[in-house]
Image 1 (cartoon, one colour):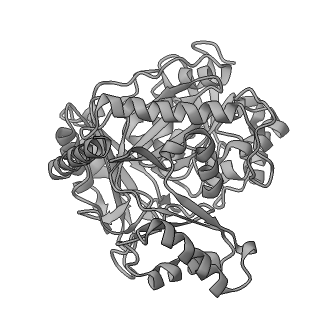
Image 2 (cartoon, rainbow, N blue to C red; image 1 turned 45 degrees about the vertical axis):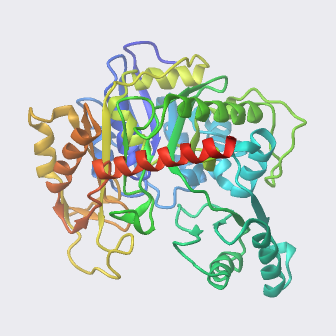
Length: 496
């Protein structure tokens, strides 16, 4: 491991603005002189700029691997292994396919991400069975439907109908395998009859994926993230993600149009005890995973022990729903959230490189963040999220005015600009690709102040992009507070 002041080589496997936030946080280290080796889906201009040593122009330390194939990532690491001290993997696909197992066994370079065994994101059915074992109180009622169990469409329909007769029609229908948050159908949003529900179910099912059908949860959402050294967890502040495309939480699900955090570790509509309940539940999951291993086919067993090293990194990015019956878990992701990580890293007080070494060496104690609020706003292409059926116009994006605003004394570090699905081409111009193009992060004393800074950054981006305008809005916060009060009142009635 590197000593203080020593130059350190860091691999970053990138996908989107989340990796840009990671690179910037690592580059702010005052203890280490970081040199970056970046695996990218495209020539992200931010990543290219950071994939050099401080003050030097080094070649060969940025590679484009569009499919983020674990084998190709391993080849890149192997070619540079003598100069890389450790790596961080941000996106879920390489984690699920076992990039850490492969890279560590073939090159000896340690990675900060869960091993394939602990890639909980790989199966929603596995998650539900895990929760049923360790914290059933956080699990909604559910049923898993596997393609191999049914020979005909009618047979599958009868089975779904039987489950609906037990729990009611208001359910969520989810593909077992990852679908980037876009395969989920929810009663009242995507279907309003059993017939429509089954059509959504079958569109997933006939593709060969298993389907999880679970009762629809009513409440307020929060996102919980934690760093891990294999022995203990260090929780990050709670964040609130906005999955729906349009203002007012309308439109289809997206990868996330923005997020916010308060100056406290919990959100404005929650109380400290809610945060403590989140931590209690995640600790139970962590304890269960440290004491168990999964079989290669994804089945759960509890005979074998492990030391938890496979959970290093961010093994838990948990979506909670706070209901009248208490905190429920919508899903568990085994990687950092996007945009949730961008909400936290700009206010990280701990030296991020040192924090990474602590995770690798089993010395993690806590993570310190400034008592600031932050708001993330994503700007996305016109044909993203159902805004336009088609857009064939100019896709050039110019961030220079946003960077100029960032450079002004008025904002400085209170505004961050993180390019995501943006590509630098041979003509020297940057072009928006198909996914979320760029996010701006505002940092302030209050959520409202942070929101205005974030939106000011978005307004100064030149390009055919659109964004939500209500991320972290006072109206949205008030609505969440009112709703949570009503849920607490309902809970008191239930317990009376």
